[in-house]
Length: 138
Image (cartoon, rainbow, N blue to C red; front, side, top):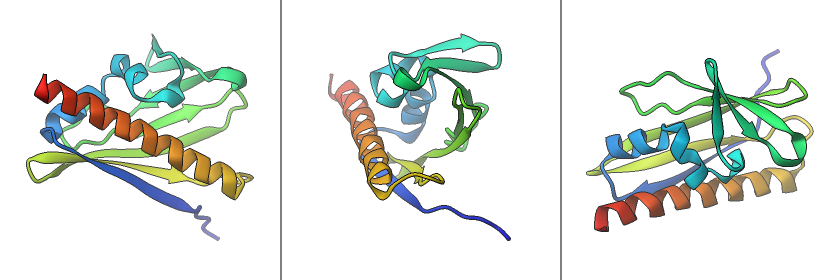
């Protein structure tokens, strides 16, 4: 039997050329500026990155290889060994971009936790939008 999980696509339009959005968002050094789930930032460690996961401890983050398709997928390995796959894309939307993140409801996650995760991702994507659109007008 194939198992699927409940998901929700969170997306925001960004008035900035999509390749610029991808270049900014895919740089792990920029993530502390907009991706609050990664704590205070990422530290390189071999072929992956390490982040302070707050109360759960240090997490290991592995990113999809740099590409021309806007794929920013990443895998987060929790201290428990659980690996969470995050599908994240930057796609062209007219002259601008659409940032799309698929939030997944993991086994054991309550409806309230799922809603909280979705709100958290939306807040982060709105921060990414703000940063990039401010760069254009600056």
